[in-house]
Image (spheres, rainbow, N blue to C red):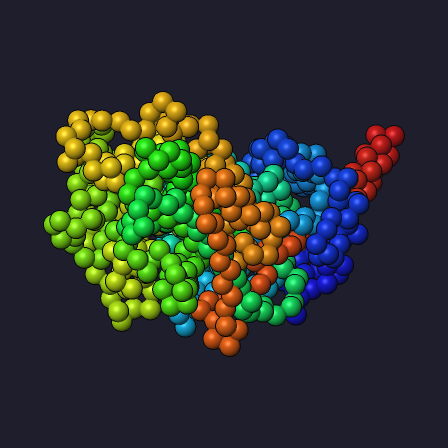
Amino acid sequence: MAPSPHSGATDCGRKLEYPERTHACTGRTCQLHAEIPLAGNRTKDLLAAKQQCYQLLHCAALFINMNGEKTEMTARQDVMLLSSAAVLLVLCVQHLHGSALPAVSSYEFSAYRMQQYNLARQKHGCHGAIVVAEARSADEPLLTRRCVIMKVQDFTVEKYFEALRQNAAAVLILLPQNISSVPHETVKSFMVTENEALQKETLIPLYVVPEDEQLLYMYEEVKQAAASRTSSIFVRVLRSMVTATAFQILVSNNNAIKAITDNTIVTLEGVLPGTGEDAPTIVITAHYDSYGLAPWLSYGADSNGSGVTILLELARLFQKLYSSSSTRPQYNLMFSLTGGGKYNFLGTKRWIEENLDHAESSLLHDSVAFVLCLDTVAKGDELYVHVSRPPKPDTPLHSFIQQLEEVVSFRFPWVKVGLVHKKINLVESTVAWEHERYSLRRILGFTLSHVEDPKSELRGSILDTMSQVDSRKLKRNGIIIAEALARYMYNLSDKGSPKDVQVFKGHLDFQDSRMSSLMSFLTSVPRAAQLLHKEPSQILLVNSLEHEFKSYLQQVHRHTFRQDKRDPDITFYDQMNQPIVMYRVKPAAFDLFLGGCITAYLGIAYYSIQETGLSGNRLH
């Protein structure tokens, strides 16, 4: 049973510091706590004071050990020895409290729970939310029924699955405010662990919270406690009695986690009509939702804000070419932004079904040259063409890939273009790339990405922020795609045009400021699919994307797909963000120790007075 926030002790028998200052987990901060400032730079001062206090404790331990060994000392020497030990212990307490953080006995903060959803009858993510446990470092040997506190560098495959193996009560990850300062190897290791965690289901709650001074102080405290395990038993007990501050983590929301089946997915489409009545169609598409360990922290800069940015810039530039009859090609150019891309490309599936099975007339019914899918294109010096079957010669896809290779070889020779062939496994209920949704309906398609492996950790992470995007490579990849499309649609190779011809330059050049603004806008709010149809900021983002389409394209349509509640394709769950209270607690033996120190001090003072009086009488 969870302890009351107002009670004087927690379930582990530890006493709350300043119990009169605790308050219930109400989702807001009381006036008393609002007046208490955060620690600021005093965290380091406190930790330094703790180290000095530990040295004083070593001295006290030596004094007491000496008292046990030298039994021949006189009574006066015993008094002096005990006085010195008592003074040292009192100095520890005074030195510690003089350097401590502001006295915040409870600290409330918002944390974000790990993904939880059911897709294709398989469960993913964590199914627990309630936490009542003592905080411990991941370096501790015993983690059972403890809340494991980790930084980004601690969240490795080994440590995470060790916490699961020991049945830890919860895992709390502290996310740095400035992700660009995290080393590349640490980011990669975190993403790998994140990807592994998302593939499985667990009952252990996992929360992610942005760092602040109070949380960093707690992390350093539990880290030091783990490091002190190597000290002698006597010193460890003495430290625990005098200086130890433990932390109790409490998620007090006792409401059951509820399934959410009334999800909607929005897909946008727009067209630039070509010349001629039976002009073939080229479809350019990208999914705009994001994915990561926690939905509220998934900003998806590279995956797939980069694909959306290039698509919107292609729409702007080709609109200028299509606006004049002299430069309008003999191809219809259809643009599509799809939702639910991170969840088996459900938005793409429903949009294809809408166009092929229900619409009386659609460009997808007519001759489709190919479908170009953009996915994760803001990094690296590689561009992989992912296909479901190798393109045959004299097909539109084969011709476009040739144009793509020509543009790269003459303008960007250091970029590697590779063809990755992956067959669609009809036994599997999920697809790896967006083009596979078209291939299943016998529409020729492919995906361009700097990622070779469809299961790569780069395709979904809470660390995928603007700091992970290379704006120069994003623009370069956009130029490569635009030039290859122009060469194919205008058939420049057969017309004898120079191989290094540039179509997109001058007023048709990619605008750095616009691309930067688009990326900043897309990453300004998390774009997880479960948020896009409910939260005001996310709804505004989708409306803004629709406005962009209407600014440059014709026949813009917004398709809103609702799930069948009786048999939903995907089921999300609530309680994705939770208020958490961190309590500072003291050992139950602390009061006994403090009372013993006071008794010893009074006893020594009384004994000294008595000895002084006897000595005076003798002299008299």
